[in-house]
Image (cartoon, rainbow, N blue to C red; front, side, top):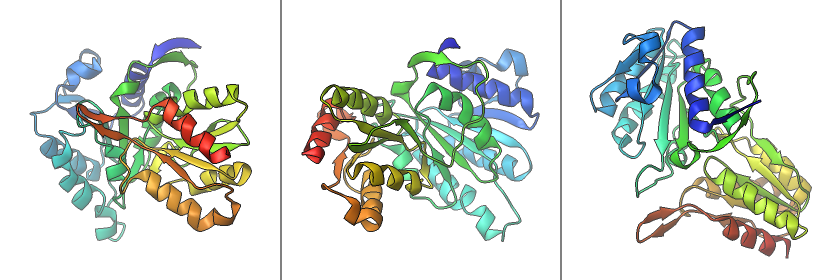
Length: 305
């Protein structure tokens, strides 16, 4: 075990990918500075681009179709919204439109939460069929998700919330590629299911700790993959606890919490012993505020009665 940060773990993942596969290269605005890998790998594999996200995402799509394994970095996801056209109408559809003849093994790293708007970018892109959208919330996932994503034949959007970048912890020396298909239970409990992802996972774990001190055992599910959703793991947990609280980075309308709540209501309605609770981001005078642990605790206590 060694101490590191989330941001360093993500950088190590990029370096390992570059070492393992000569087809891998990194492209984006000022990536030579953000990765610190230009000196080791040179400008052919660490490619700084002009500040035009739609252009370099399009170049990444073309190189992926041509057999390369690009990692395209969009350092501020809100500013990268012009890339939606390239991602939605090209990257996500080429396999279908070509009858399976073309694949787009592209990884796009997006950092959300860097400005006052703080939109839930992962939740937005989770509406796009043909993509895989993942949200690493732990050091292990920041280190292990990238290689798995690069092996996927379809485009993968890897969304990192900026509030996680300075997270410190211990990371095993032999961190392995991370599963990007299934959610994982981060804390076992039998009284209430708490579902979180990305920046809401630490909030949810803090809430679970406080609930434990009050005699309520929370089962904490980390979604990890937002598209497609691992409904099986969520339903398994709800089957044990019979209660559900969803903690969402996005706002109330049209977000992931709504999709998860609707899915559980459709498939496990008669299992539930209390209404489904949702805790979501709030709009304030200074922007958008992520859910607080106290709000999650309050919702869970309402659920257990």
